[in-house]
Image (cartoon, rainbow, N blue to C red; front, side):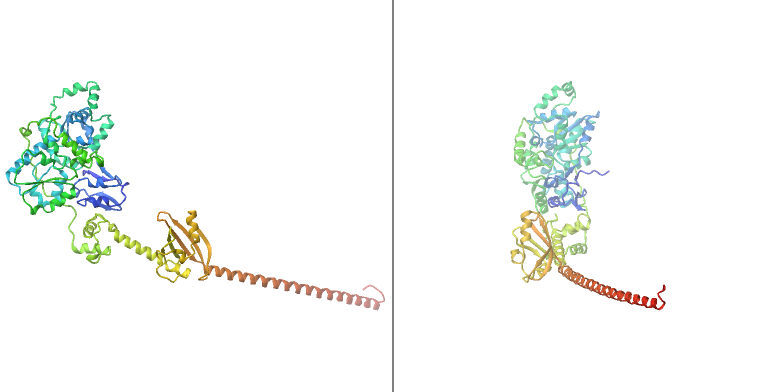
Length: 584
């Protein structure tokens, strides 16, 4: 499985592109609105972890690996970066050494011992006269920067191991069949250790602080008392057979973790070079840009501003950088200078090969096609604003082609498109739209609203809304801090009826009104009401007429019935008389 040294916590990424803007080599891809490290481009300088406002960094830990090694039968030695003095509350190296021994380390030494060996190699190479310019190789992030992005400067890069690797070689030469754990503030050391073949594990100061806390340890003077209180521990430590070398001895190489620290570590600097120190990966990149045109320049490059004391996994606060520099200066002068490690037969030569940048080369046609998709048809359209994180629109187009960026990351284009879409939606809405601010000035209004209210002026934005509209409901909505709906309002000027809904946009401190023209509905209801009224009147007249006819018919039927009854009685009497009074 491929090692991953740095990543971003997906849940924390807020799609702000700040990490991408800060990354000096653009080793961050943003896909599906999530930032991710491009491993093959990343130099592990840690800049992205320091600028992320959401603390989305995730340095892959090796804490469990280190603890497992300590439980094995193989002796494990710690190589501790000299910047420990500024991250931990220790009076000297013996304090942190005792704390590490309490964890189970066979012993601990300062990486400054390896740094001193590296300086000796630098002195030898400088005296050889083989280097037109000389670039220090102590920082693995800078080495990677040169190898991948400034390969023209590779002839100037010192062919010497970093202090961490040099120290691991020294320890393994001194103590056969052992394991070495490097401890420091650097993320780049994670990959360097994995690729070195001599460093078995890398812990950051942040990881070590957690381990100390979990085991109730503190690398200060109290740790010595803690050791003595452990049953049998003091005797066991004394019986290891490992001398307490490099304890609180002076070592000019302890200056390594601060600016100009390497230069300060030299006993004698050759006069035929100009000695320059550059800190911060962006400034290192600028220095490397023009390096091939110079000669006689010694460049001390450190990826971290203020030096290693300000590494991405140091335990400093923002206000502690200058104090850290002072702490290292004071600590570097303790004791007496130990003997040179040159007696150890350790080869510190290292060849730094050219590495690919990652990503493929793109044609002008491909770049132009991507630019066209974001509305850039001519050079003046390329704003190069850097909002997407890339230095230019063309760099961003290259990233899109390589799958490192989404085309929507162009914020001016997206804003223009959003504003254009919003404008089209507002202006083409069948409803009237009015937006006013908390001071009751017009922010936006569409043509439909102007027609409804009979407004003939064209420029309304920024002008008082009451000059054109009835704002009483707006005032009421703002005063009561609630949305209001009026089912029917009459506009006398245009003889229109509207249904108005006023919503409060609290986030933007604005009032948003949608006016629906309901004039036809109101007129229809009027006509329907009139028809109903006429129908009622007609029905009432018909009923009355029918009642009158019925009454007349009834009256006529009554008269004819009586007359018929009389006639029938007369006929009956006549017939009776004719029959002689008999029954009929």
